[in-house]
Amino acid sequence: MPRKSQDHVHRLIRSMSSAERRYFKLFIGRHAPEGGTNPQLLFDAIAGMDHYDESAIRTQFKHEAFIKHLAIAKRRLYETILRCLDVFHAESSVDARLNRSLHHVEILYQRALYTDAEKMLHNVRRLAEAHHRAPVLLAVAEWERRLIECHNYAQVSEGDLDRLAADATSIMEEQLRIAGLWDLKSRLLLILYREGQVRDEGTRSRVRAFLQHPLLRKEPLEGSSAKARFYFHHIHSAAAFAVSDMGSCQQHLNANLSLLNANKEQFSGDPNLVLGVMSNLIYTYTRLGRSSEAVDLLKQFRTAPSQWNMPESDDLDLKLFSTTTSLELSIHSRLGAFDKALELVPVVERGLARHGERLGPVRKAAFRYQVAYAYFGVGDHDKAMRWLNDLLNNVGTRDSSDTVCFGRMLQLITRLDSGKTDLLTYTLRNTERFLRTRERQYKFEPLLLTFIRDLTKARTEEARRSLMITFRDKLGTILSDPLEQAVLDHFDPIAWIESKLTGKSYAALVRVRALDLKDAA
Image (cartoon, rainbow, N blue to C red; front, side, top):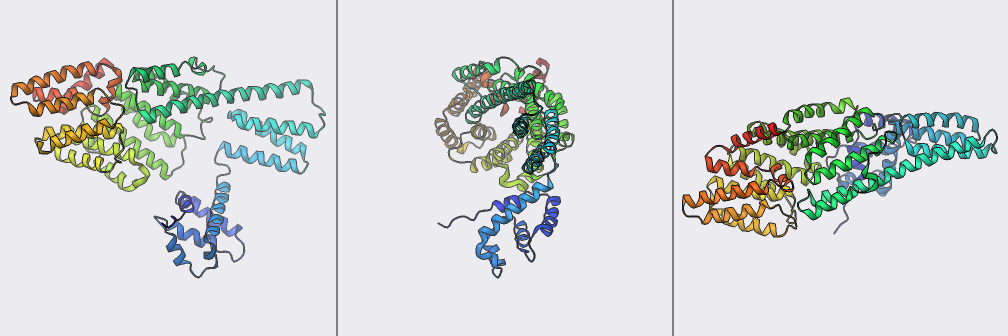
């Protein structure tokens, strides 16, 4: 089997903005060797490819000398692009300016211009302290020690040494706290990404025990770094989400949103953090029935990139499309406004076509489910089934995520409601087989399968109605458990069974239940 051509150069070029590409041409003009047009030729050829094709490159440049050593030419082009981007973005962030200034300190030091290096280092320290850049402050402390040694400890007192030692110790202690919190955050998120929300008491106890770590018992003091406080609230919000404690989750997310807005300069290097916090908070408001707050925050989410001066990029476009569209679909569906959700279908279709594989299978599956559910909500079973088939036909055989699981549940319910029950028994068997491969299930899933199986065997309307009433009563008991309420993110089984018992539309009953939840909130 031939080795697949490497496309790291293609990925880098395709990630460049128009301004960056224009600057690259100027950069090449200034720095390329005389007669050396190869970098620009190769750059333009690769930039014009939607998908990297090395054979096309070799054909196009078969008469050029560099084609005999294409791997070397590509490596040099890659390094040249990175040097160009380094110059282009030299002043684009605090971190870039600090690292550049530290390099200037090194240059002055190597020329024995120690006094000039000290002046430069003093400016670096002031900027790093103003923006709470602890790693840079540690590097500054190291240079200060080296410069003291160069002067043979002239004009240095014991008090100066005490200050240096105290500053370094304080910075390292804070860095250790941040590293510890990051490790705890990552271990908790690893559980969540692999297992999803907690569904049993054993896992809930694990999460609660996790929060007993000394770093998580008390919020870091006000004097602690904003990053340490951010991690503290981030961990507590994730743990609360895991055990479906949406009230606590919302409090910690709000604390982080306030923290980010109050410390923009400290978090300027990672503005995507605010998008993550805001999107999670919108979702939490939706779960709590606080839909007006969710809608207001969604409007703020759309303006966050300009508020935080986020540079335009394909990645930002993708994030804004996927997050805002998904959240808006979720809000409308939670409120029973399925007609409004369907107005977003063209947006979803354009986004799926435009962003393609960059969306990833998980996000694409989620969009397909949300659209299918919206069609189900208005009673258009044929279109719901088409989107469900698209979802289930494009996932791996071992994919047992919640989206795929509820896709199968909704497929069963849609077949039942459509009256086209010829494939219902076959679908039921497939779903049962699928659930046996899942290590974790909600209590709702086997309850639904048992209900549908019994319903298909019932011969009288009285028997069917009796099964529906029993199913509704058992649902009420199950969904009173917070660990089971994540089911409502995907489907409202109580509204569904009530619609079958009363003859009212599913959408109307979802709207009533949404109003009840809003009043309770």
